[in-house]
Length: 205
Length: 205
DNA sequence: TAGATTGTTAATCGATTAACAATC
DNA sequence: TAGATTGTTAATCGATTAACAATC
Image 1 (cartoon, each protein chain N blue to C red):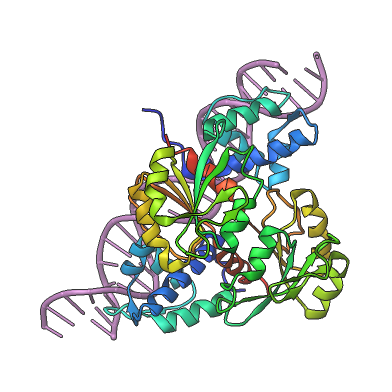
Image 2: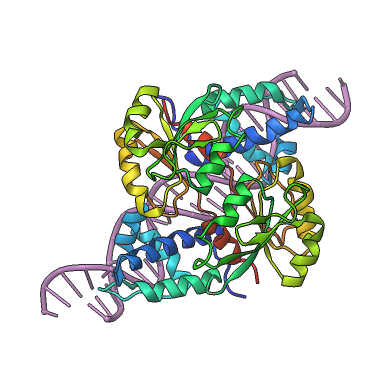
């Protein structure tokens, strides 16, 4: 069995990938742990150590070939493919997500949108026809979708979560401002802007 | 000088506050570190230790009075007041944020919305008239706003950040998928859904 | 009182950093 | 070669957990 990589390391890899992709866009071919660390506010030692969990991607004296490192990180994170994502909730936020152009090229594509409001079912949002939540399990199973984004009111978050899990979803990005319970084989990530704002105000006089 | 509290502790307080607020909504008066920990997937010892940095809020044998603990946490996090927030970027995401009803009651209120697109300037989004970005510094100074949410394209994020910082902003919630550089007295939090999705795919077969 | 739970100390665990031989 | 930078080891630093006296 391969050694387990700390989750905190996994959490930094997408940041490395994002910064490297940008460097590549700026036309740069090579970088160093020092340069990357400066951009990210992370020590160079930490970057080298993190990367070394997955192999030696650099060359002494030279640094890292950006296109190569980008490919390697995509492979590690399994985003060298396109994941179909189910979006539940077609309110303002769900709508913004449905229109967001930033998923493609980074490994994700919204494949379907659900909502339980009669106002919204059947309407078109971006390129999607909003489907009733009752169809959720069926569509997710049919497309073999593994990831969902949850943009429903907090009161419905747990119920929808249970449906998603029952349908085979293994990762949930939860925008509802509430903790959800899932089996341990399901990963959850949270986005709550207020939580992050509250983390800043502590420091502001 | 009071001892410095680890930032990782500060980062958990909003989660405690959110869970406690919900417990209160459900009509519960008292909770224990064990119960709260179960809800959040955090050990009871950690919760007690975190809280103990700020004082003894509980009673042996009984636990914590929820309304009291909520007030105390709000005070610690300085959200027992209302912070005015500047929103920059009136695209899909900015629009969704402008309509979001979840800021009020948790310590925040969007006070103004900016965009540099002639299409959007002067238009109404929710209760706000979109103002040109050139007005940014003036309005922020006038209202003494300390916090901004950044929902502009990545290419403009650093430029807008520099303007915000020059105008006296001390906390930035950055929705643009790019790292921004700020002086060390300014706090930045990031929201990039793709980063969080990529952190999950590593674990999904 | 007996049972429950806190706040805190000490022990454990894990993550970060410093340093450097290897080498491009 | 001389300079630069990696990958890795060991040392340091910090965070979490276990345990328990205090006490409601």
